Amino acid sequence: MTATIERPANAADLGAAYGELGKLLMAATYFDAAEVCYLNAQTLAPTDMRWPYYLGHLYKAKGPLAKSVASFEKALQLQPNDVATMVWLGDVYLAQGRTDAAEPLLTKALTLDPNSAAAHFGAGRVALARKDYAAAVNDLEKTLALNPQATAVHYPLAMAYRGRGDMASAEAHLARKGDIDARPADPLMRQLDELLESAEAYNVRGGRELDAGNWSAAAEDFRKGLTLKPADPSLRHRLGTALYQMGDVSGAVEQFEQVIRTSPEFSRAYFSLGVVMEAGGRHTDAIEQFSTALNYEPGYTQARVQLAGVLARAARPNEALAHYERVLDSVPGLKEAVFGYAMALVRLHRYQAARDRLTEGMKIHPDDPVFSHALARLLAAAPDARVRDGRRAKALVDELLKKQQSIEVGETAAMTLAELGEYEQAAAVQRDVMAAAEKAGLRDVVRHMAGNLKLYEKRQPCRTPFADEELP
Image (cartoon, rainbow, N blue to C red; front, side, top):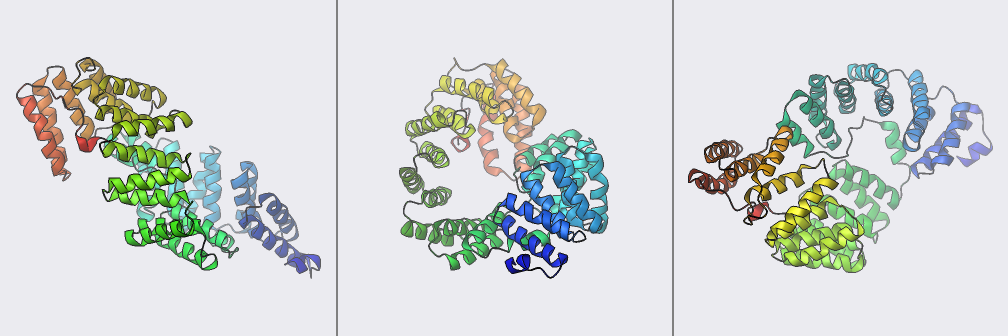
């Protein structure tokens, strides 16, 4: 490649050499140097769509978006029927708010490839921007059918269902939202990924597959990396993570334990073992693993939050509070710590303090219903009369019901009605919620709710805001 640049046979060969060097540099994330090479390649080989195409991706990654648009448009002029280029250009148009420009591109992409999940994703977002909620739901549901791992689809789909007034579906998709996009089949970008045959490159590629939920492909990449660098703790740890997601718990544990043997200060391995132990109900072992992770990395926030949660579930809520406090000292307002702290106070029957923490949490996270819902439970059913406030609880529940109509919120509504002395209505709501739970196959939930129904039928309020299994 270098020899061709130094002694080119002709302009086309020199352009190709610059382009290949640009690919190598871009694969290694040397974007500025790659940009220079691609621009040279584009000048020397103006009919080769690869170089403006790669420039489009480069500018999409580092900016400015206007240059990304210009480059993808040039690539599309050279190959007018390339679906990947249409999808990526449409994606950049959407990022710029240019739905009118994106729509015809995505429509043509779907004509050429009706099974392109990425094109359906783009078309769904165009429809959503135009408030055509039925079309948005149609395209976004097709996206998920074609690519169930594309968790980034759930949020716009939730907004589309909300626009149609289907709050139950909106709530279900909001709970599953993530950041894994639906991406088009893209052989040119795959070539880029495959350029650097090194442990680091396999780690990067495996990480992308891990993010996309392609566990088997991720494991394969990590194994390839380990053949080149067997002692790399990051590769082995991520292999364990992929195996765990594939359901191979023993294989995952074997990888995590090997990381600990060869790299005892690699805190992530202890954290992952803690997650496995906790999932198996082994609280004591999980506490030991999370604690060890923190011994090696005291600032490991995720490990400290997990440790606090396990301590609370292991009937050690006072210790949990201390860890939540440390987290909040370093990351003020962290949702998991604010909520976990409040619920640990509930476990300690410190209902007034829990109420105050949840109220503060609502101010910090006004769009997250977890705080208002838990607060409504306390206001409706706390054993401490100084905490209960039925009217305030009802106001919170009424707002929650506008956004989500779940079994849990329905049960809270019944608690609130009973606190206000409206026992017949409370019992009626409880029966409706129990019927919904029965229909969903949640028999344990139905048995739990039967106790509260008996209270309401006896004209008695609930004084248990949370069952043990409902506490985080």
